[in-house]
Length: 398
Ligand code: FAD
Image (cartoon, rainbow, N blue to C red; front, side, top):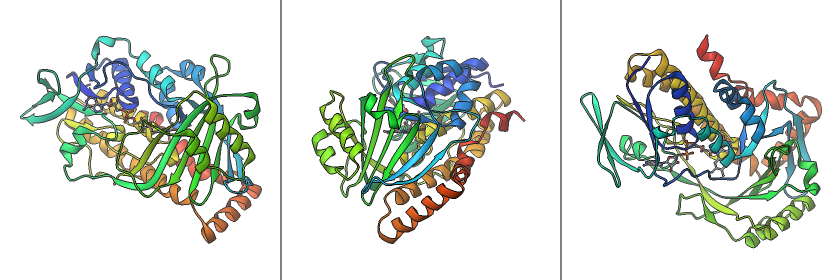
């Protein structure tokens, strides 16, 4: 087992999961976060069975259930006519959950017992590998040395920029809005599932989240539109709700009502631009490695960004426990993870074309979905089985 201290950058979903897993194994770590305090950001998040397995393994089964809504199936509808194109039930023994991203973040934060290892207001500016040691420079703090560096510093990773100075994200041509509403009785037909409306330039994903027994449940909305121009990569830019509702006006009565509720609700609606990130050739160099969005940022169209960060963290912690050599542990981790995350990045990207298909492509898509959903609906589960049935826990324990 690695005895040297692991320095983690970023107390987001991936960094916190890694810290939690290392603490349970007795591997020393320090976690540095640029924000001044613990900030649980975001609206809804889907937690598919592949991630639920990992969170259970970390002993968080009850806590996760307490913050989650159980998704039992999916429904795909036409954005223009509201026609149901396909619907199917999930057939997995492990739950598929939906919760507030802030609740998941808080749960991971709470799972770390020794909070003195978490340091806020620490923004890593650069690092250098010298012989066997790393030297780290910070925005407003004295330099530090480190034995090993895990960069879980998100989509705009500083460490990734140092490893790959030429790396540039490319605007995907889509803007997305996220909104949240307190769950009301009139939304009950959306309970227990995720609903997606698909159209030429628009698609909408809607699902409840939160646990109705423990807290107020919410209805989460992600609205995606083709949009030619974008310059900012931030994802918390307040949007004008009335303009969003007008832009997404369509023939679905239920969606219209929800959008009207969104406009009158006090909750803010945020917009962000979607960027395509090409897969990286490697993540680990010497005693430095990348994790989560820093390693493989992806479009949100398969709802697997946080899932991959959590899987990464679990696998990395396992190798740090099995190996005595940090560089070897980092290389094994990269080797185990890179193929799967690259494939998920690719699928997330392809889903954009499926959701926004128009003309003949849309006719073929709708016909195919209708046929499969009416005759062999389980085929739709089989299509995602490689994602949801994946078990990083038993794969590594064998
Ligand atoms: P983050 O959670 O972004 O954390 C990075 C952390 O690093 C931050 O706290 C940041 O402040 C810190 N940091 C950055 N730079 C520095 C620095 N230089 N020094 C110190 N600290 C630094 N994924 C799913 O699996 N399911 C979903 O349903 C889903 N829905 C999503 C919906 C939206 C609207 C968005 C935007 C994303 C969604 N995702 C979803 C993706 C998911 O949120 C991300 O993939 C996930 O948060 C990545 O985790 P991370 O730890 O890599 O990065």
